[in-house]
Length: 608
Image 1: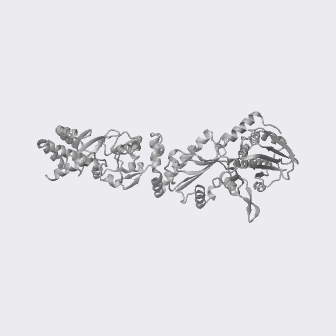
Image 2: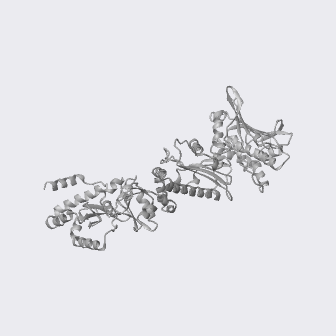
Image 3: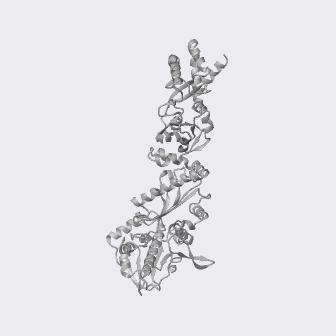
């Protein structure tokens, strides 16, 4: 028996126990190596006219023998000589595939999956013994390489009828690894990891008590086919089968990039959120393939969080993979692919927005919150990317509109007005909103808790400032009206100060912003009433309070009543003050701290 080198022993032990996090990928690795071997022979047949081999004859064959507990993976590729067995398998991390590619790096159309020479040894995670029977193409001699692990290996002469390689795994006798002797389990693993290997993977299966070969893999993936040859039904069927969705997607994006970087991608925008989408358990990511071999089930690096709802696959031969093929190097290629995919998704959504508005509204209702979160969570860094995807309800147009559409329909406005609440109907009843609508102002009616936070982060859109109509600095009066109101407040300074002392507010003042309502609450500063409610509903809230202002309609009869009470009965004035403030809080959906006191005060006034 020959021993592995000391370094190889340590690497094998590390690899088996640490590098691979999922045992089942051993089959992917061995099938990929078999594909490489066929690639090499196919390439030779293209460059050497003396070699006559039909590509359709190439295949990878898998057999299970439950009695012997063996799983055999065979290929009719180029095979290995005794020296190559010694070099490629006797020294871990020595890759014949990588050598082959280096020797032919100036030639085109060389597509080699395995390049690092370690994947083969993943077989020892599930096998007590590994045997490699190989006969090099053009040779009359065959050899068997055999090893039971880190102790070492042997190489002996043997007989083999045809060129190629058989890898025979004696599966460990334990409950966990018994699954690798089950036909259905092996078929599932082939479909999962190696479905798009370009050569047929044939498996010996039992049917009516007879053994027959059945091709398991799909060979040519949909994303590598010409778009003009694929029907919409095929795209939708692929989506349904691949991602287990009972509804067809809203859109698909099929891309083939060529030139300095090559990759294929097939991206889908679902029509609805998955049941776990808004939970911590949800994992974003696209399926990542390298030359048709599944590398990662969900590559999170290919999608930004705000597009985490997207499903799809990416297949590239340009990605730098580490020895386990499970952990991607953070390289320029991956980042470039991710950036390109992000642009494709955004462009598709914008196209849907303009060409298929009903579909876009359906998308928005499902995933709009994620777009808003993308702006807010990035502290506005990504607002340029996402702001044109936003939709809000327009009070004047009575429908959802983009920010660009709002501006186009309100060209004379220098401000984008908005108001927040629980529903559009409820928002329309707010005193401040009713007054502005009566003046033919268009307002964005925001019903999502995140809306105002997004506006605060964005600050402006196309140089137009966002302004909450419930803030104290909304001005729509003429200069004459402003002057008249200022005079009234100055003359009522003592009255308003007395009222302020009865309340927990920053200010009490008369206002001209109301139409029919007697009072309203406005806020000063960055925190609005709606923001206060949202933040105080969060766990471990420290009790956020907006800086509130009680505004009283100077054209309402209540104004005259308050002035009279100030002159005649200040105690009665205090009662009115508390009732008016309670009214304003109720309108805003805020709780009343002392409901019993307020109801008693109302009754006192009613009976007089």
